[in-house]
Length: 172
Image (cartoon, rainbow, N blue to C red; front, side, top):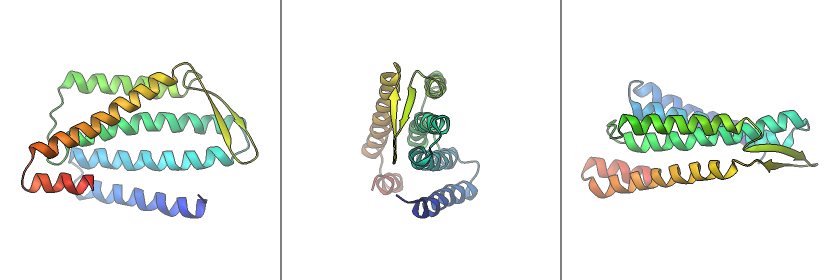
């Protein structure tokens, strides 16, 4: 994808997130959605620029940002699903703190050689060399992504009326 497409796309995504947040800044769901949109833009632009820069250090940093942002992004998706559609948080505090802690640790390790060890730059892309904790990152991502899907599916099955319509709208 070209930058001429990615910049307007990023602006649109951030605008949607910002407008949603401004509509009700107190809403937990809106806050999580805004964080999600901001991290999505970071991920999109990091992916693009990591393949076009010729500096090894910048490419390595951008690849590490990709992994750090996705680890936080998937946790934000889970928090969004848990609080959607009625801003109700049914997650016990100790599970929320554990999720925060694990996500912070994985995101921090993304900036070390333990998840992204190195990059090799070729003429039109960069190849990521992974570190020994890549499988911990993958397990974290897969677990939280399936938790996101499971939470929405469970809420859809248990809901009725307007709540069910909101969840169906989100899923489709």
